[in-house]
Image: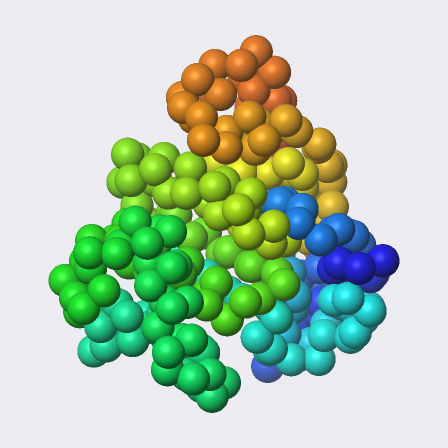
Length: 268
């Protein structure tokens, strides 16, 4: 299958005191090209660990990740990462940040400039190309981070709480932008979030993970991402099924958190 295959991944971290933490256990997921999946779960369920394994930053203890039939053995341009904070080069202009990847690959300047101009126009920053990153708001910096990721033409975009640090209004605007970019580019996207509403809005597939060890607890197929493309997201949230799923998932995660707290009290 062309796409991303996460095949029976387990991850154990060995501690200096001789103990070990089983962060993930037997996680398997298949994503077809162009799918948008959100991943949700309580703290400590291994969401970011899973994303870092897919990115190639960590090697799993067991199992493997394959992208388009090739094993993932480390970071590579076909898997782009967008972090909670943009991890931008603050001393560079917006244009130079977005152009960094193509320049490193030796792309001719004229072609690089065309790509950069198109992407900055796409994310609404065409008028800010020569601004320094530190002059931009948090939401604008995340737009730069998205454009920089897309400039490398990845097959898969990995997003680790990319909107978590934004205010509510900016976050909603960015959610709309993520949906538009997903539909326009056809990229496969995995998005980690702690927000149930955001996971519902931005996941045509939504995976709920349970701790510990981190594992797939439940998966949903949802209509809201498609409904939200170019639409008023507040209207999407009023859909009866949206509210039903939100309450169901909130209760699910609350029960997990209660179980975690109970375990911690028993161990004290």
